[in-house]
Structures are given as C-alpha cells and as structure tokens.
Image (cartoon, rainbow, N blue to C red):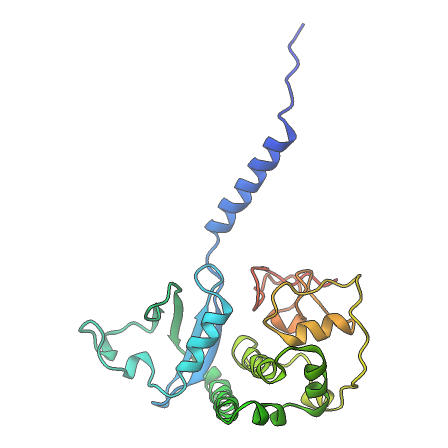
Length: 246
C-alpha cells in the first residue's frame, strides 16, 4: 500500500501565507502620493511621500515648511552641488528626521493647482498665527458647532482638517464648504455597523462614519483615496492600498 501524505498543520500554512504576503508587499514599487506647491522662488514642486518610508504627519509638517523657501533647485548649494547639477527628481531626508520624502519638478499641468494650494496654505497658516479664536471664526458655522461638540480642541481640529484637505487630499474636499456651513448641530450617532477610522488624522472621516457616508473598509472617507475604488490608490492616513467601498 502507498503511504498517505500527512497534511501540514494549518498554523504552518498560515505562517507561510503571511510570509509570502509580506515578501510580495516588499517587492512592490513604492506608491508615491504627490502634492504640488508653488514656492517662494516661483517654481512649482511636486512633493511626495510613500507609506513605506514616511507618514502623513511628517509629510504635512515638511510640506507646510516649504511655502516660504525656494525650491531645491534654487536653494543654497548642498554638498557642493548647485541647483543646476541636481536631477529633476530627488529623495529628501529632512534634517533630524528618519523619514524619506520625494520631490520633482511639477509638470505644467499641475502649476495652477500648486499655486492654488499655496494660497490656501498661506491663508490657514496666517489664521493659525492669530490664535484659536481666529481659527474657529474661519471654520464654517455648522462644522464649527460640530467640532466644538465632538472634539477636545476644536480650533486645532479645524486646523488639522484644513491641512489634510490641502496637503494630503490635494485640495479636494469630501464635503462642500456650503454643506459644512449649514451642517445641522444635532447629528446622528455613529452606527456600530459602520467602521470607524483607527487614525484620527481626518475629522471628515469621523463625520462620514457618523452620517453613513462613503467609507473604505479601512474606515476612512472616500476622499482620502486619490483614485476610484479598486484602482489600488493608497489611503492618505493609513497603509490601506486601495479603496474597498462598503
């Protein structure tokens, strides 16, 4: 009689599967999310980040700091290399940070967006410099009421929301300002059947979850995924690789 081949323990198969998934993920090229910005020298630079080498918070901090400085190609020479010697696409490590970010000369088709985002960023930074009261006055009335009722620091929440919309979502808004202006103060509580975002980077995600909006399986709002569902577009706030509409 022939011998019967024993099945491998299920936990070993699971471990092999997980290892294979991790190796496949490492083999994939980094998905870079790009956001253009018109800088002090007049150039428009596409700044980018990948979840493999950075995080959204670090990218927001860096992007915000670029508004009042010249682009890499018009900055002071670094390590003996002048702007003209630098390639059109760079990998940048902010001083004192452990993250890697990306920069490239933005194509002409993104110059208008870069200028618009620079104007919006300059506005919210100027408002923030005047304090919490000014920030709250800048927020749409209805959304301000919701932030006051549902967040510990509504002024900071509005500031974070605006930076997320400008920097991570490239100026795209999940909800129009007119809608936020007339947002009812009494909102439905979050349904337990709806996923809740694990990362609090975006108040719109929490609002969307509370009101039955379009969410990804990761719990974040559709606007946090640059492309359409199933296009393998990374989420702005987590490691989710593609929007899975529920």
